[in-house]
Image (tube, rainbow, N blue to C red; front, side, top):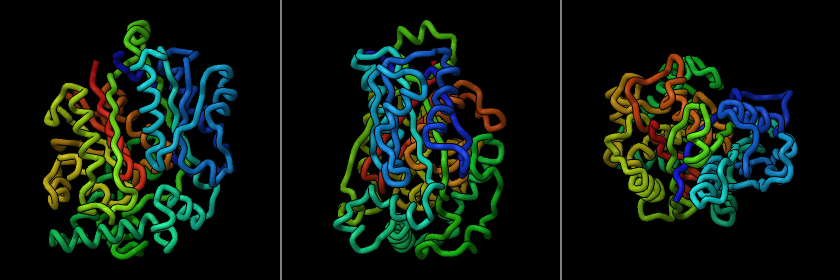
Length: 383
């Protein structure tokens, strides 16, 4: 089985891009990634998007992007796994290289959420849930998160001020991230005084409407040797669970995350202690804490302690979301999983600017579809 390498990355700034179309954002990120890799053609294209069929009434993104890039003729297709759609595109592209069916693959994630009103976007984000069970009663992604939040605080006797530190951390890291949507600091008091979205979850503990696209060029070992670009080795694994967390044995534990991480670590040949930076799915502050625990970086009920002790800062023992994460870099749904992997790649190739970490050789990115109904764990290693 061929190894997989990231040979190039391309990122658009996360923002509300009123003047740019969905295909423009895809093409911009793709051209940046191809240029970064020093390559002009690929064998296939995979595009991940969660919301384009709803908000833009546009599917068939693979062929659309191939046309935009002047690559019509090659296989190109869309991939969907809710807000993990970008990571799903990476998974599909990596598997094609591992099977020796391609030498180079372009994977792209994109969503343009500003084309919908806030109510439309909130409703659209529920397409990753079971509509007959939760959508039917008017539940939203945030209201389900709020239930988990309340359960967590009650079970572990944790105050909200402990969990709400996570957005503060992410905004701190976004200050020097050129592609971040919100590159400014916030205070804990600001988070705790922001209005409720669904009690106890507050507005500043959630992400906002965002547009963006991110792209990677994946290559096999033979192609990697021929390219002059900086490269990292990629291993990506996935697992699934019940769509609704309240159907699970324990709503506060994500088996899909634990399983996909275990598989990725096993395949990569490294141990968890070797992971020196992580990118996690912080669509809400409670999701961040639950992710830290399900990934195995903290015991159950203890994830918030990593925040309190400063272990997740850029100078901490396990720096987390070093460009601001979903909260401050921004969360353009289907693109997020690729932003996370690209940011790890920038760290490992020493191109993270003022956010550069010292002496890291491996990092982990976790991307979720729904509330951990689908989980992807990616491990990048220095080469």
